[in-house]
View 1: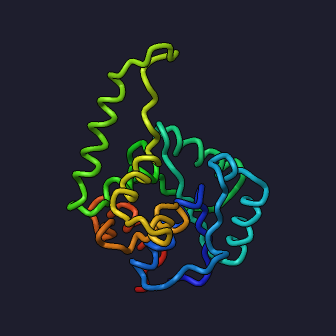
View 2: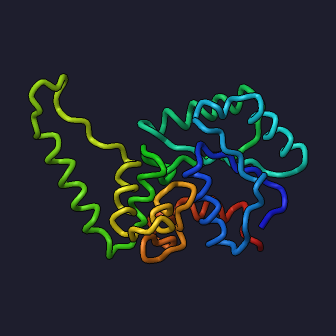
Length: 205
């Protein structure tokens, strides 16, 4: 693994996943200060983030921005690359979930669950479909709100984990164990775009 790099992510969920995925791929832990969490997509443009990237470039290292594509992959990509050029920054960009479709980290996670557990998400999707058909008198406006994708991932893990406090804390974004093969498949085909992106910068030749 390289000795000089900075990975910029949006939140703690992204940081937890990227740290564990890099360990899975390359067998080395990422030092704490090698990942910068912006705590929001707009904070990529903060002075501190810009200064960290410029400093890493000056040291001969690389910057990798791994953010969510959100609702429009092409628009998100164009916006970030335009800002990169305007500020004279050097970084490589990957947009979750797969660097081609709209979405976010939770879309990636949904596609790397252990296949044996697929019935849990099938059940959840039935719940979502039923939810929009329910009318609650006096509620304005209808229909009922579909839970966020984050809630689906929480529900997936809560269904699998046991009732002890030590188990339940593993539901939290900071505490998740993506190396638990009973829950997740870090070798899933869906991860190939991210794997190939990271290998370009970290794989030892």
